[in-house]
Image (cartoon, rainbow, N blue to C red; front, top):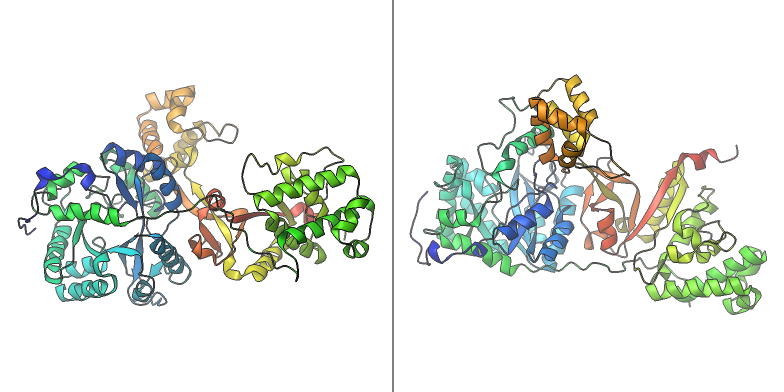
Length: 605
């Protein structure tokens, strides 16, 4: 590496908080990143840093968890992604030309940038998917506002050009990015190209040389990153196991994908200062400068319910009252639908018993005060539409059965007064949370109900919800044993020694090897079992796959990507990148549409 003394002060003046890790992968970089989010935040704090970025491969699925965890710990969360840039257009899919893609580190500078990052990630998944979710230069130009871009690792556009000794192409690429992003574009040096790095890589050193030259020639500032994939050096071998799981390889395969030649852990900032502080202190200070420029605030706990299309002259409150009292007259007084619909609430209320009237008034008051009137209008609408189409729904279960309003609106078919069911278990002003109604639908016609909602509220307002398949005890043991080529019979025997979940909760392997006598004996006396279990403990809890929740559907008041990033799930359907709990935390309307075979079978031939 060409070294030139900087005019800025030397490493003696730098402290750990002057460096910010801007390129980190968590276990949301599926089967590539090993770091768990809470461990990342704890380590950042322990090492004396005040901020850090998460930039997972092609996904923002860990961003909300990271944001909350970092905020709680007093660490500034920088929201990012390591995206894939298509060789040509994101729409091109020629096997001979478009299998290659380039890495690019993108960070949200403000809330505008955060929304553009969600749009980039969504369109990469829905428009650019070809082996990986890809963006292109057109998208970057369109959605550049509020984003900070780093040139990326050795697999970035500039990195590849410099590896191939094509400096002119690297310069043109850098000039294009600077023309779009201005001072929001930085050249990304990586630490494993420094001579002092324990895993010095000649290729990265060559790239770093070229980046330094480009920086001087084009007046583009530089930063240094470490491309973290696991927490500490002790996890390096476990990370190799994880890569083998992802690629279906054995650890012994000589030609398998491996990152063993690099230290890709969360490097101590003191080591970074030691490496770079004397000659290039600005590449350290620029990381802090970027962190100071980034300020994203994600608002949680909002009520983001779609606007129900109302008849002329009605608002949500008046229309819910009308439907509720008309329904109560039918349910409790035996009136026909036609008779009830001719009457206003003021005409109906005197006809109801005191018990019915008081219960309805109480429930409607709570719903109005909590802002959930629109929610009940939406739910009753698609259920009553479905029933009018001959779709079979369940009678209602769970806490929603305690609502007389739900009974009046035909959401449930259980009389809460007859059975002494409590409304407070369903909605309670002292425990603010979105209502949760499980909607049971005959399995063969569930999709019709979802399609009805999509047409009514907008195709881009409705989506399935993602779920993450995690590598828990027995699966972790089986995966590790396969990678280490442990015979299947032995692997199966060892996996079956792992205690099953207790009351639906997985028992950590680190606990089981101490508390379960059989597993402890195996761990202490069988070297193969010990090796498998040690690695499995490090891998346990990592995300192994993305799927689609069995019943969860989200309906938003505006285009969904304005609130949450989307992906193309394995089943070929659009799903949120965030799981169900986080969808609810954002305040989006989540519905549980359960498909039941028994409801189909209940139909009389």
